[in-house]
Length: 190
Image 1: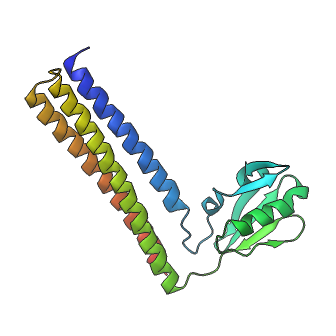
Image 2: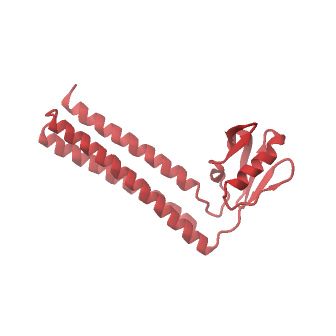
Image 3: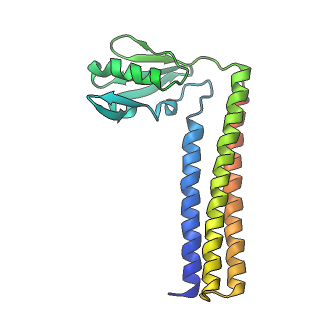
């Protein structure tokens, strides 16, 4: 195997893991309610449907007909009670109303205090994500160090690889900060 091939594989692996972490942060930030109707807040809801835990989006059509309302229209009307219970137990702070055909979820306006709490939650999510990125950096640097120790790469190649890993880390930390800042602005804008 080519000497630089080992380093390239290490960098590609680190980038893939950092990308996976970035996608997870994006999903987690989408789940934080901003006071506007967004069906992504329902993404993690599992419904006990005939004894099987099933994602809500597989049992119903989800829509946001206006900025303050989510509409859940079950494909199987007999499951409406199970869906309503699952929404209640998800503890989203939403109060579903069931008319027998669909479930309406009015989205209450967020108080200034709640917006601040959610903005802090965004910061915590971002910090956890950056910690994961730094852990990926540490793993990649250890792999590079091992390659140098086993004399598969030179000290110069090791230094260059460490610089590339750091550059990758900085890029992903910046992306996480940008995503978090966008979400904070979205939350704090009345």
